[in-house]
Amino acid sequence: MPAIVLVGAQWGDEGKGKATDQLGDRLDYVVKFNGGNNAGHTVVVGQEKYALHLLPSGILTPGVTPVIGNGVVVDLSVLFEEIDGLQARGVDTSRLVVSSAAHLIPPYNRVLDRVTERFLGSRKIGTTGRGIGPTYADKMSRVGLRVQDLFDASILRQKVEAALELKNHLLVKVYNRRAVEVDEVLDELLSSAERLRPMVADTGLLLHEALDRGETVLLEAGQATMLDVDHGTYPFVTSSSATAGGACTGSGIPPTRVSRVVAVVKAYTTRVGEGPFPTELLGPEGDALREAGAEFGTTTGRPRRCGWYDAPVARYAARVNGVTDFVLTKLDVLGGLERIPVCTGYEVDGRRLDELPATQTDLHHARPVLTELEGWQEDISGARTWEDLPPAAQRYVEALEEMSGARISVVGVGPGREESVVRHDLLG
Image (cartoon, rainbow, N blue to C red; front, side, top):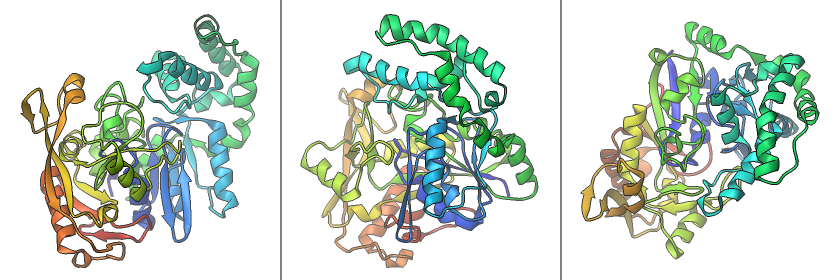
């Protein structure tokens, strides 16, 4: 069985964790391939609700091997806090594997992330302040720390000293902060080394061998397409590759072994942080949608900005990722609306655009062109087959499918694992 990629089609928070969890025991490996603890997945299993931040969603499925890939940046304190929290609730985390090539988030990068955002003021990006961006910057500048460095104290010290030589100048002379001591960084990092050691492996080789055995590997993105550092609404993006291309570089699996790309998309649109958002609803409508959908960040708790479904964004995600299937989530949230607006294009300086604008300037000035679709009054949370959905809800899904560039294979009608309508098999 070749690998399957799972990405977000909007600005994140689409419900990727639930989509992974639904596949359950049909998966052998679930790999997180990008990001860190700057985003989260909420998964509901029965009466239990789990908020995952750094760990792959597969950690909740018995028999699945969860993998933190080389493209992830790891905060060790967060990793073990999350592991301890799950173990306290009876979840077996013993199968977790961490790439020896994944980068570590050192304490000085958390400090730099926070002070830089404050320094930018009105020009801030809207980061979570968890050191993600500075750690990816270190990776590209070749001054980063990798998991494997924990097991060679001499190399680790050399790398920390080299990194702090520049960073302390920034902290002291630009941001008026105290210098970070090399030993305090080493003490924090090395305190977790022995606990981490049994989990560390060459995960690229591990996954290659699994695919050769015919096992199923799911590559799970953190964040989403519109937050991708190359293909998102730059500079209001994350610092990693959250698209299908990033799944290969962040896991060590080549593109020739990927058979399907599944993108998760909400029945409306949300985003957290700064940046353009053409369909955003301000005022009572946006507040009502936020409350109905419980749109507050899994990791940050920040209220999400809410707006109507944006078909050009979905088409863009389908094109950039090579989407074979969409999973449409939170359809139930729209119940009770008489009419449901959907963005079919944009107006920019008097011009009609049917696709996502190519420049940041045009996207900033874009105003949505809305088409209204018929709503439904029924509670659809109990629907388990396509026929269970009211005709108006079926027509809404079919209209989105026609606009979005790929088939909608699963429709979410509630937060629980079983609250879905399956139209097509995602692994078929």
